Length: 42
Image (cartoon, rainbow, N blue to C red; front, side, top):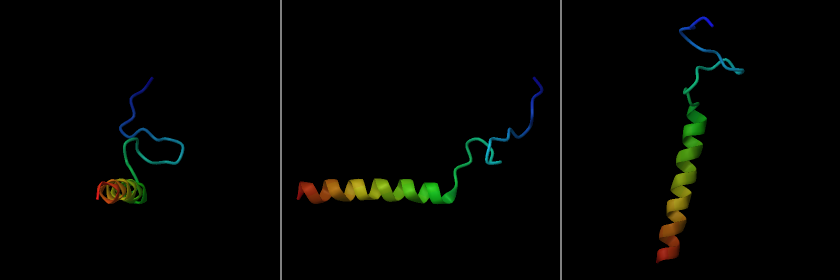
Protein backbone atom coordinates (compact mmCIF):
# COMPACT_ATOMS: atom_id res chain seq x y z
CA UNK A 1 0.00 0.00 0.00
CA UNK A 2 1.27 3.45 -0.86
CA UNK A 3 0.97 6.20 1.71
CA UNK A 4 -1.10 9.13 0.51
CA UNK A 5 -0.59 12.59 2.06
CA UNK A 6 -4.34 13.24 2.14
CA UNK A 7 -6.58 10.17 2.34
CA UNK A 8 -9.83 10.72 0.47
CA UNK A 9 -13.08 9.29 1.77
CA UNK A 10 -16.24 8.81 -0.28
CA UNK A 11 -17.39 12.43 -0.10
CA UNK A 12 -13.94 13.83 -0.81
CA UNK A 13 -13.23 15.27 2.62
CA UNK A 14 -10.18 14.52 4.72
CA UNK A 15 -10.84 12.16 7.65
CA UNK A 16 -11.29 14.13 10.85
CA UNK A 17 -12.51 17.24 9.06
CA UNK A 18 -15.93 18.02 10.53
CA UNK A 19 -18.27 20.36 8.64
CA UNK A 20 -19.22 23.57 10.43
CA UNK A 21 -22.88 22.60 10.19
CA UNK A 22 -22.19 19.38 12.09
CA UNK A 23 -20.28 21.28 14.78
CA UNK A 24 -23.19 23.71 15.14
CA UNK A 25 -25.65 20.82 15.32
CA UNK A 26 -23.61 19.15 18.06
CA UNK A 27 -23.29 22.39 19.99
CA UNK A 28 -27.03 23.01 19.67
CA UNK A 29 -27.85 19.52 20.90
CA UNK A 30 -25.55 19.93 23.91
CA UNK A 31 -27.03 23.34 24.68
CA UNK A 32 -30.59 21.97 24.52
CA UNK A 33 -29.66 19.05 26.76
CA UNK A 34 -28.07 21.33 29.34
CA UNK A 35 -30.99 23.74 29.15
CA UNK A 36 -33.43 20.89 29.74
CA UNK A 37 -31.43 19.73 32.76
CA UNK A 38 -31.35 23.23 34.24
CA UNK A 39 -35.07 23.65 33.55
CA UNK A 40 -35.86 20.33 35.26
CA UNK A 41 -33.63 21.17 38.23
CA UNK A 42 -35.50 24.35 39.03
